[in-house]
Length: 611
Image 1 (cartoon, rainbow, N blue to C red):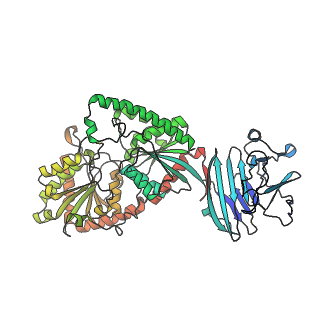
Image 2 (cartoon, rainbow, N blue to C red; image 1 turned 60 degrees about the vertical axis):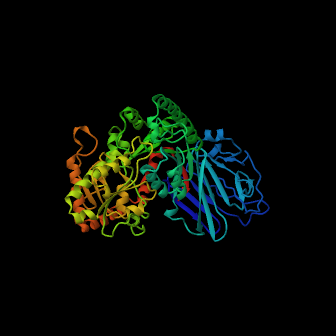
Image 3 (cartoon, one colour; image 1 turned 180 degrees about the vertical axis):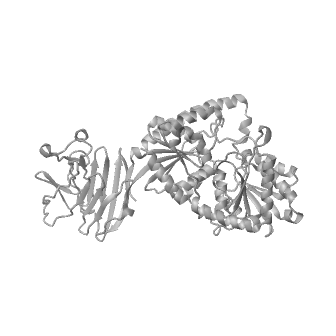
């Protein structure tokens, strides 16, 4: 971040702009009372420490005719100041570059903005100046403008490699801009989200984008197709540009012209083989097309959100030279791609690796210097229990004294819903008949179509087989889970693998719910004795997927304890809300991510705008 030492607007219409350590000072003098008939007195020459001269131009308002153009089509005039060799006149870019990056080019704006420029001896003078445009060859363009009495609109534009961005700021005459008006770098960032389906990674990206400062980060998002995430990003206006790249592949055997469906797993082997080959070609085409987007959009950084996105971003960094930042939301990978993943993560192009938990960071011991562990953020205002009306009990017709153990998210085997059902049966056996009659287990979510087995259906059948089907409510997918989670008494997150950082934990905590979960992955970094119960986890015996019987019984014991201790539920729920406000506020999270984005592309620079 570059800060301005001074940017002062005086009543006479003057301004000063300086950059610490760069020796550049611009001062607009304003219309001189002695200037008549296009003549103007000579003005002092403001110089950089390297001897380059500043030249000014301006206008007298909308009715002013543009001054004569000189040099190129935009009136370019190069003025050098360097002792005996100093000269003034038209020069091309080649000569400017030969004289060094400190040389400044003077641009007369187009019709309605160009002032009348006159030459007097060896000095350039301006009648009724209002606009300054300066270019330091090889470094930056700087544009400062103002106008009107009583108020001054100051616009600062910074250009690097022809990328332009600017912001206007209105300040009173006679006041120096404060530190809030410091000049900052804007990083043009291409965010790649590798799936269009509704899920934790996409919603976490939404939370990041919502609270990024658009003056510091330009937000262009690429998705494979339209869908729930595209609608969410567009509805909330959290992107500057939204692009679709249909050649981004979400599943290697998906059909070429539509999203993956469960029935596609049972396609004939030759069909799946043909799709695999065709999708490899689609990935190559996607890389070519995205590389063109990166170059055409002059992006400073590729931000990769998701497993497939990390591979794509690593390849783009190698193809374009634009650095990549990986936001890692997974804790393991298929063995077939581990080697490639390791090579890409170690490459120079992958500049920064942000991991959502220490569990996710363990994959990158070979390049630990790049890794930052930053937990996910949440819009805690949207999950304020005082603002969310609970609808669960009304929807299900539950009595007021019902005790609801609830879980929400994708229903997959590794998410532990088999263990939830088994623990529920054990707990109901331990409770009295009156206690058990008040307990209800609610699951909000389903199994996505791009998974072969409908695990939600399997779990519903399991609850019936265990004789507790009447104690379970399977509500399926809901776009907005808040009114349902708000009706939980205790949130259950039964993952049986190293879940990197389940979003359901943060959402439940923000809604003031105590959380019961196995001690796995990133869950242990969020849940503590004050906010819930971490159940000791032991893998199932014999290499089977899931938790051991001892772990299931320990979870059942936690259920019984919460049924019999309402004060514990309330106390931990309040502490969970306080923890969410303190540690998982998306506003704070976005500021941290902003800094990581800027650090990741610090060597490339960016665009300078007023904050």
